[in-house]
Image 1: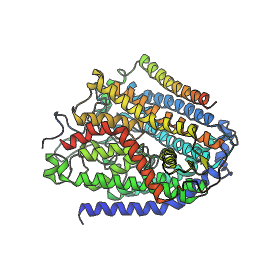
Image 2: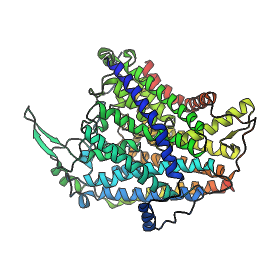
Image 3: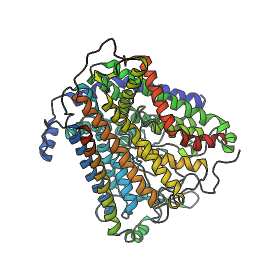
Image 4: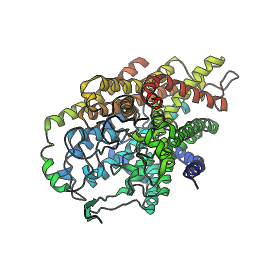
Length: 557
Length: 75
């Protein structure tokens, strides 16, 4: 079987597996956040931290809880990294304290679900810091994203109230009922495929040529699963899922891609279930599938097409540089497109080595705001806001009342949607412009010209959208990029969440309007096409100059 | 067609511990214990720690003010 055929077979199998999980997992997620029954362990936890579980929160209280929780998390994680040599070196290899700029960037990165890594895990972090610091944040940040999506959905399901639920209850349930059970099962599967999971010290061995090589260890399997399942992406090892201890074979590779897509693709079903109209969920998941399939197809085409990648690519008959030979170009393309349409950022090949147009697609995926299917929770609330914009635009075009799921889309809702959508381009393009326009920023650019521009825009787009994958080839470990990148991650994560929850609060205060002859049906293929069109036009217009001067200019050179 | 990379640097740059310059880290695991002993003291500095703690509070403070601003806009 040719590698191209094997690649498409992988895609079809992946699609079938995700389709099979859509209904049961989506129904389960809806059940988690709608049932009144608490587990005993949950009641004990609420008592322990002093939470009144029946106290519903206003949107502003909900978002303040997120901000307070995240601020404390950043400071706590920063402290762990800075003191790891003194406090956390008793298991596994000893490590120095992490330098301040790297420690802060990493703390922010893991709390915001970005997992941008300016360090190599195997030679920088102790086992305890990785396990009880970084991996814990991988659970917490994923649960926070899911909680925001659920609060957003409640904006549609509730009427004449300003309450969106209880943040602490939502996060606790998300972790205990969804992420932990799935991670335990998935972690065991990964270990069975050969992913290492131990507390061994590093071993130094002598190779056949007489050289010495240090073999790292670590409880990798148990962290690898939440890295993907929670759309985090921060690898135990520097080379992430290209490392044989993290991703040993083709089965583990496809399983990792499956796990990073699983929850985001099932969330529209939970949405349909919660708004009591499953067809609304099908419409949104159709939008996600169309964009994801187009990204996989486009990236695979350019990586396999020898005319677009330079001399080396033409000689090799495909873009082989930076590609892990165990997975080949199709495996790289499927992983790269799946990791960039979600907010995962894990990699099994090197994105800087993608062909110019292939890399352009990865950048475009991230610029979409990661809504197809997007990060855990973040994809859902991002897509809901774009659906609201589409309803408004569509309603104006065909003379229908702008309504979505029984809620009127008024100027106030559109202002929230506009603020949500404008935040990321402003943050990304301002940070990129500052880096290009200052000597400090320029010092770390190693590839001038279009490729260098792509690297900078990709870096800040990845950080602001909480993806975390890197084009590299850019000295992002310089203090300028560590510090500015941290600010970009914080603003890119929390400012849109503020506007999303504000919009949800505004929707929740409305009374439901009955469906009438003037209501635009948002369950039809026409609406699906309109949402896809609105997304492409909005993103295309916003990022076209950067894409034209970066990957397009490089590809057409 | 020439390579798109016009400088001699390799595309895959190891982000690992050198604790200096643009790349604070390397993936070279040999002699890790000796390097840890050497580097441990050189990466201290309470002023820089305070600066990053202050920056965290500042950014979250700005986000807090955005929430307040949106609340005022709602009224």
